[in-house]
Image (cartoon, rainbow, N blue to C red; front, side):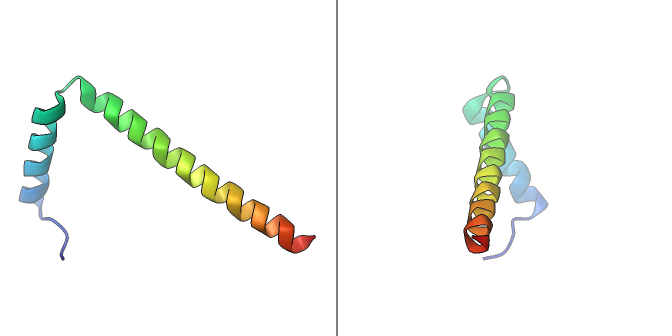
Length: 56
């Protein structure tokens, strides 16, 4: 399966805009960004916990 082209990306964005509306998109983007940040933080915490266990 290949990456979507520019036309497909535009169509997807238009569909998302129609489904959620222009007011909800910033909220959805913010929530998505916070979720990614929390996920990366938990991965980093897990790695540091694993490293500290190895050192003990």
